[in-house]
Amino acid sequence: MRVVVKTCEVEEIIKKSRFIGIISPCQTEREALLLLRDLHQRYPDASHIVYAYRIQSPDGLICRFHDAGEPSGTAGKPIFQHLEGKQLINLVVAVVRYFGGVKLGAGGLTRAYGNVAKQVIEAAEIVDYIEFVELTLNLDYHRLQALEYQLKKLDGNIIGQDFSDSVRLTVKLPKSNLPALNAFLD
Image (cartoon, rainbow, N blue to C red; front, side, top):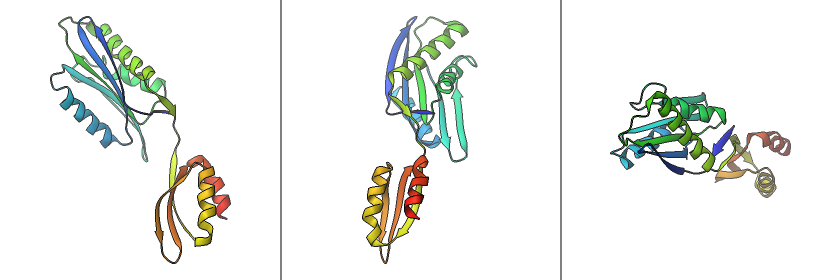
């Protein structure tokens, strides 16, 4: 699975219609919906704002796409198929269309939305998805420096700490490095 690093946009004119492709990372479905709402505010006079997203949640993969008034299956689905084909998660791809007066037909719409989605995906910086875990640890003060060193080697970091009789830490690290951390802690 792969993720997009930051928001990216492309634009194309197809038979007088203006298509703006936008790809943006998001971690939750709520974040995706807020992003789409922002697009509707940013492009209030757009003819259509079509989208697809795939988000990894604790309950599994959330997949949605929407044709936004275009004929069924001609807009959201071709975008979604690119996300699925490239195994992309935790992102939204939206295509904003300003109708230019020339009808494209079902095949033309499918190609247009699919091609703009493909272009914006190709323009984006995409990296492999790394699943992280968060742990709460209690340890003695004299072990703190060694733990910090170990976390650095394991691409982890401390995201919360509480000092009292002992040190209570919340750490975040790649799930694949969890066995190494557990071995260090034993």
